Each structure stands twice: as structure tokens, then as C-alpha cells.
Image 1 (cartoon, one colour):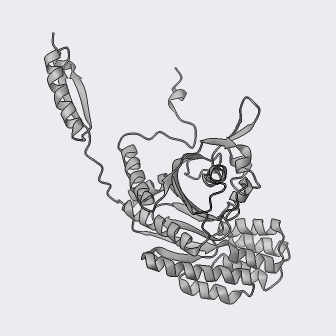
Image 2 (tube, rainbow, N blue to C red):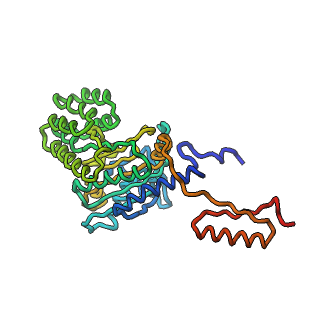
Image 3 (cartoon, rainbow, N blue to C red):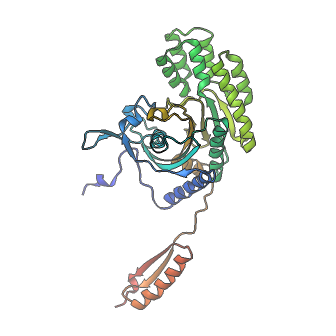
Length: 378
């Protein structure tokens, strides 16, 4: 047998033993908080039709999808992102529902990219979606849920950066930018690539003062003062409304008592183009990327035939585990398994020890019943 068969492909790995125990423990801690907010679990397929994640939906680029065909010739993909799947499911089963719907989910996602930079191609994600509620209170619920869930794992050194896509879109509209320029600029600002953004604006002949304003967006983050500065930069109502919503959001977050974990960053612009309003990311020490990403997507369900606003988030379990490890946060796992041995071939020994094992298992312990071959009955 080839030793190659023992190895996994690039970008995926095995998880076992204590590491997997830690993962299950953290998943449980996160899930318990999500459930406490009234969210119901939902499971969607690991693969979907290609169109669920198409360019029109505004999700992962086609070249980064794992694509394959079924016997009928349909193009299928392994899910790279949960949100479009949840939107499809909600539109299918809750088309006429008007009251708020709360979903939670967990599973693996798959991204076929060669630019790994230490990232995995298969990761475990957990998230929640609040559908049919367009209020700022819904935004606050989702963000406070993220904060409380992270705290429940033992993390306390993290920050949730909040932005507003409409602020950026309002400036682009006022400046008369075409859709292609807006999307290209969005990618530059999302990646915090100031020089690429500057070069793009020069190439597309974007006039002042909009060129300067758009460049400032990439570097506009901080506390409530940054929102006041952002408001002073613009005159269009779309951007002003976006800042007003963030101000209201902050007031509600103060009611939850989580404002110390919150900051504002108007340069947050996700690669997922379906986001339409409030957008946020959670960062912590020891991990280079955001451990949580989320926001409002009021037009996504329309792609599946249902007119409904929505807001949600996804947590990357693998990154949260890495953060806990690097910050040396202690995870107190349940007691390990108890091993009971019996004399191999000795019926009386087996019966006696099996009785003891059953009793301990009934008490909630993990018990392995193992034959002692060194003292086997002759």
C-alpha cells in the first residue's frame, strides 16, 4: 500500500483525541448561548446547485468553488458559505411567514483556493440568521449574541468592529461611480489596500472631493467620535442615514451591556456583495483574520423569491480554537474515560467488571472495558 494514502490533501486535516474534545467543548459553549436567544437549529445539504452560489447572488467567486456534476449533468458545489443556503431554505419553507424567524446552524464549508497562507480549505462554522426583522434592535441582538457567545468560551480579549455598507454606497452614488468601479474599490478598501484604492481612483478619474473622501473611508475606524467625523464628510442622505443607524445601534448595544467590546470601522466591506447595511467582524489576539463575520443582507432572499430582510453571522470554530490556544485560555474538559480490565477468557471476571462498567456508565462516566491479555485465563 502506498504511504501517500495515509496523507490528506493540501488544506484539510484530521482532528482527533484531546484536540477534538476541545473542539466539541467550544462548539457546545457557543451553541448554548445561541439557543438561549431563541434560535432553532437547521441543517442544509453539504452541496447545492451551482446557482445558489452564483455571481448574481454575490457570494464566493466561481474559481474558488469545489464543483462537480450529478448523473443528470447538473453542476453542483460544496458549500463555501452558509448564508445563501439558509436564505434558499427560508424561502422554500417559510415563503409566507412574516414574523421573525431565528435559525442557527453548524457544519463544514469548503473553499478551493491556492492562496492558503496557513488557512484551511475545509473549516467548521457555526452561525445564526434572523429573518423578517429589519430593525436596529435585530442588528443589536445579533451582535450582542456574538459577544456573549465568545465570552462563554473563555475569550475576553476581542473586539467587534462594526461598519455600514450604505455609507460607502452613498458616497459612490454621489460621486457617480459605475458598478464595476464600485466593486473594484470595495475590494481594495475591504483588503485595507490604501495604495491600490488610490491608484484605482486615479485611473477612473474620480473627481474631488469624492476621491479624498473615499480614501478616508478605508482609514475610518475608532469610537463614536469616528462616526461624527464620518457624518461631517458627507452630504448625501444615504450615507447620513447609515451613520444615524450606527448611532442608534450603539445605544441598543449599551442596553445589552456589551459596548466595551464594540468599535466602528467604516472601511469594513465584505467580499460577499449580498451585504446591504450593518456589517461587522470580530477580531482577537493570536489569529490573523476575523473569527466572526456577519451583517445585514436585505436583498438576498429576494434571489430565491422571498421579499424579506435578514441579518446574521458566522463563527469560524477552527480560528476560535486557535485563539484560545494562543491566549492560553484554559479549557476544563469533562473527566476522561475510565479503563476497567478483566481477565481475558475468564467469564466470571468479565461479568464482574461488566457490572461495574455499566454502573459507572449509568453515572455518566465514559468507561472502556478492556481485556487483560497478559493475565489471560489459560
